[in-house]
Image (tube, rainbow, N blue to C red; front, side):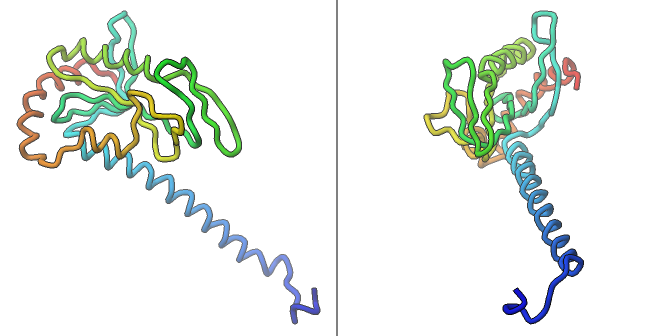
Length: 190
């Protein structure tokens, strides 16, 4: 090695470079995670005129049900259940368990759609006259190669379906839903 390099490098001399490289990697990981959450937050802000996060409401059977995000939109009330998985997702409307396969692991989880139907029913019991929709939101790191199940969407899909280009005229619709929204707030624990 001394034939190639005119000087020797000791481990102590490499330490600042290694530390700098480690800081750079940590910064990139932090930036990637924070940009994902900003993207989720910005999309929810774009489609919702008001939002309640992590709320608990009665489920109608003397129990309670947890909701990740509840949005007041010009289309009514939208329930968002977030699944943050990385890898290829294999699931369908009729499958009981869905599987995620990533580079280094494989795991299964229960089909999230039946639980979403329960959330929709619980909200409908509170706001009977208002349209209620629900979506299972998979963030950008999830990929469905065999087709996307019915109530599943990405951030782009969510924005396309519930986004409003003319927020000024949409406010009229939102105001009609506001008394029902306030009723949810009274029922909510969170």
